[in-house]
Image (cartoon, rainbow, N blue to C red):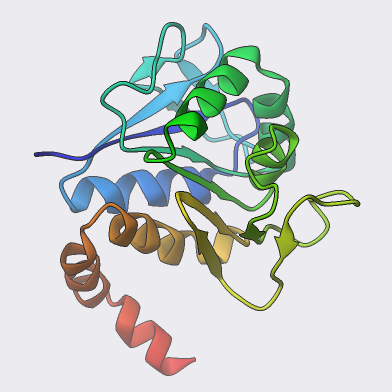
Length: 191
C-alpha cells in the first residue's frame, strides 16, 4: 500500500525545507502532495520562489493521510499558525496518534501552539519556540522523533528530516538506499 503525505504550504515557507522533503518522499514512492493553505494554488516561498500546489487544504481530512509535514520559514510558520484550516487538520491528525506530524525549523511553533508538543521531546530552529515551552527541548540533535511527532532544526537538516519521515513511515530501506544514491552518506562522511 502506498504511503501518502501532505506538505502544507503557506506564503513565506522555507523552500528548501518543503521542496527537498517533497522530492525525497516522491523518490521513495510516497504519494506526497503539496497543499496550499490559502485559496491560491500558487504559493510564494520566503525567498521568492513560487510553486504550484497540488491541492488546497479546504475539506482535507486525516482520512488516508500517513503524514502531514510543516516546513518552516518564520513568515510561513506564522501563516500556518494563523490558519484555522491548518489548526483543524493538525488537531484531527494528532487525535489519531497514528498519523505522523512532522515540523522543521520554525514549523514546530505551529504544533507547539496547538499543544501537540506538550510533554514531548522536540527541537526547532533556535529561538523559534517561545518560553515557556510545553516540550522538553533538545538542542543537540538534527531531528527528534517522539511518538508520532518528528521535529527538525532548519534548512541544512531538511534531507535528514525527510529520511527520518521515511523511516517512521516504515520505509527505512528506501531511505537508506536514497541516502546512498543521492550521495548523502558520502557528504556525511566528509564532515
